[in-house]
Length: 447
Image (tube, rainbow, N blue to C red; front, side):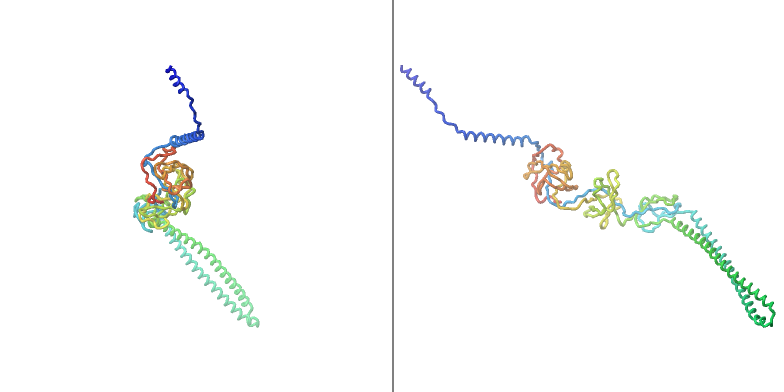
């Protein structure tokens, strides 16, 4: 009986009601919101870091450039050759056979120096014939002039005789006229004197007309003879010039080039024998890519580094004809020609494009092609301040030269970007840099 009582007591305890505490709903909501936010942040970080295309690259495989403010000057590096600014062709004015050689190709000569002597027998014979013709013409002229002088003298004598006879007859007629009038002399002789006077007057007039005609004829004859003599003299002078042209001299001081003549060689009139290159001034001829045809203009500027000095040049001529995708430009030194520069020497001047101006710039490198080139928007990798990573950023570049690139937008002074070739990082948005990239400092090279 006691066991039964005890058993019921035990069951009674087990069947006792449990009292429930009321739930804290605001706390539960807060915890749920916090958990949701945590999951969202974790998902965002996972998407940003785990899903963003990333590449790990050693620092020593990258080249970094710092953006800075400086004076930017666009230029094009070109290759050219120094050549004389003055070149004079050597042409044979007269034909002939080379009898004597005084110089060789490459020799330096002075103005007027004899280079070679030609021989032309026919030209010498021509001069002889011309001189003989001139001598004959002069002799004929002298003979004609002598005849003319004698003729003039005879005409003058005849005229004087006729005039004297006229005077005598007139005087005699005048003396006898009073006597005939008074009947002391016969009229017949007086009539004869009148006839003689008329005849004398006719003779005098005829002689005067003949003298005038002779003078006119003599003048025409003299003109013809003088013309013949002048022609002969001109022929002799021309032949003498041609004979003088057989001696070929240097027109200017300089260096003989392209001179391959030899003794005994027959030279035609007008044939080129080479040229003389003046050595007092040199110019530089360069070939420029056709892309810059509209930007290179006469009187434009260029520079040339020789040794430790920089020389300024001026664009003296632009040949717009394009050949093999290039056009020719001639440059002249704005000041003295470098003493160490020689004709035929290859040089690498810089053609300046546009005006120098202050601008943001960064060192040029392989990245520029990957970023899209000049004057376009592109993407570059900007290095973080601690140098541990680099992320892509859209920027805009202007002109460039082999050393610097003009920054138009997207970067600020002090920013550092990867300037080495980034073609392998085309689909990468972030680069994790293994190793240390030195932080930016003021000791980096400035433009």
